[in-house]
Length: 441
Image 1 (cartoon, helix red, strand yellow):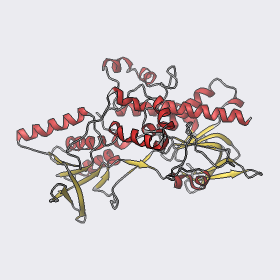
Image 2 (cartoon, one colour; image 1 turned 135 degrees about the vertical axis):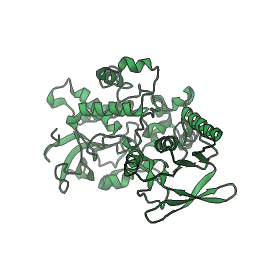
Image 3 (cartoon, helix red, strand yellow; image 1 turned 90 degrees about the vertical axis):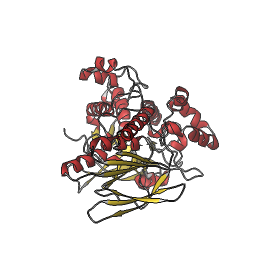
Image 4 (spheres, one colour; image 1 turned 120 degrees about the vertical axis):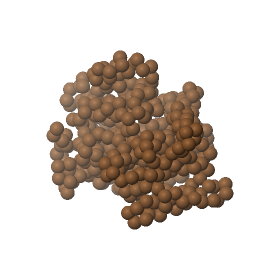
C-alpha cells in the first residue's frame, strides 16, 4: 500500500510518534470520529512508526503464553463498547467467537491478541507511515514568537538517506519502553535480553550448535516465561534461573488490588500529594513489577520436583543470588560467576546462553523530544509536568500540544505503561484534541 505521507505543506491536527497499542487506540478513536463528518471537519492525523510493520513485543510471543489483562481491556471497549474494532468483533470476523467463548476465559493467548492488534492496525493503515523513524522535533514560532506548531522530521520510508518534514498542531508521543540490562552488559550472540528470545532461539536451533546450559537472570513474569520456554525448547539442556529473591513472587491480581487499574484510580492518583502517590505505587507494585502468575509458578515448581523424583534435574533455581561476572571464551561458552548472597560463596557456570530478563525502562524523552523538550515545564524532581488530559504542561508562549502516552507513572500511576486503560486514555486525548481545535477556531 502506498504511504499516506503528504507533502511538506500539509499541517496535521495531530501527528503520532510511534504506533504501538497506545497510538493505535488513538488512531481508531480519530477514525471512528471522522467516519460521519464532512471532509473539512475531520481530524487530519498521521502516525509515524520506525518499524516496517506493526509489532508489539514480537520476541516474547511464546505460543502458549496468555495475556495478563482481560480481553475487555482491548483497544476500544472501555471507551466505546459498540465499536466494531473490539476484540470480540475481531473474533467474529475470524470465525472464532464461539470457540473462544467456550474456553470460559478472560485471557486470550498473547499471539492471538497480537493478531487482533495487527487486524486493527491494518484497518487504519491509511493513517500510518511505517519505516519512518523520527529524528527531530522542532518548535515552530509565528510572528509573535508563539509556538503554534511542531515540525517533526522522519526518515523517508522510500529513501532512508533522505528526510521528510511534517508540521502538526499537536503531537502524541507513544514510543513505548526500551529493554534494560545491568550497567556494563553488552548483548551478543550468546548474551541476550529476553525481548530477543524467539528470534534468538530460532537462530540457535537452526545453527545446530549444542546448548548444554542456559542461564536466565530475573524474577518477573518474562523471566519465568523465558525459563519455561528454554527448558522446553532445549530438552537436553540445563536451565538455571538466577534471582535475588527466595522464590518467584505471585502477582496480586485480586479484585480489590486490581482497582488500581480502574479509570477512576487515575483521577485519585493524579490529584494526590506526591507522598501519597509514592505510597500507592509502593503498595501496589506487586500487581505488575517483578511478579509472576501463580499458574506459571506452580507449573515450574512441579516440573522441578518431577525432575528431582526422576533423578534428572535440568531445571535449577539459584535463589538469593546474583551474577557477579561474565567472561566470554572467544567464540566459545560463557563463564558466569554466580554469588550466593547470604554467604558470598561463588560458583562458575559454563553457559552457552545468558538471558537478561531484567525488564524495560522508559525511553529518554528529553533526547526524543530534542528542541521541543525545551518548552516543557518540569517539577521539583525534574520530571516533565503532565496535565490530567495527558498533555505536557508547556511555557506560556506555547499553544501547540505534546501528549504523552507512557512515561507518566509519576503523574498518572501504574497504568501509564500498561494496556489496562489504553482505550480510556485514547478517548481522553481525543476529546482534548477536539476541544483545543474548537477553542482555536
